[in-house]
Amino acid sequence: MNGDSPVFRQVSAVLFDRDGTLVEDVPYNGDPRLVRLLPGAREAADLLRAEGIATGVVSNQSGIGRGLLRERDVLRVNRRADELLGTLGTWVFCPHTPQADCACRKPRPGLVVEAARRLGVRPEACVVIGDIRADVLAARAAGARGVLVPNAATLRSEVEAERWTAPDVLTAVRMVLDRRGDHS
Image (tube, rainbow, N blue to C red):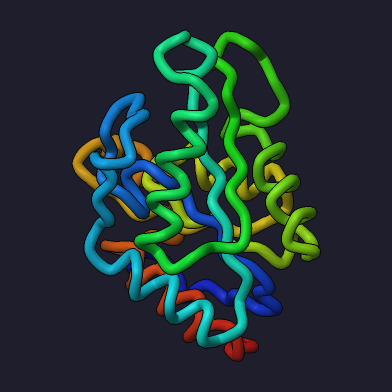
């Protein structure tokens, strides 16, 4: 963990990025057979469920807008990931390209706000865990908190710019759960 100890009070939901955070990043994946969970992803989801914390996924899927995937392909991949993770509360994705200037594409807040709405929680009561700074910036834009879980694709400058980081998704979830009762 990096930076000062975060205080994650009143956490009602944890929202994850999909590719590179929960599952191996296969660019523009439309094949459910290629879905592989990253180490600790299932355990992280299980811990949250055991604590009664709602879960969801917020994911940019520009392959749809680029014509490389169909929405039904993304839905099939999401279903396979959901089966492996033990069923998360909601899956929300942005189908637009970066040039579309939409309100949903991370780092904008739309996906986080919509996932919180679907889960029946306030965005401010959410934590977003992702592997790039756009995930954390989307959390902030929605009034949520973010934790960066860097991987080989994460830029060093992104890691250096973030206060709250964890080496993997399971550690990030443990950090959130450990800090919920911390009122320091």
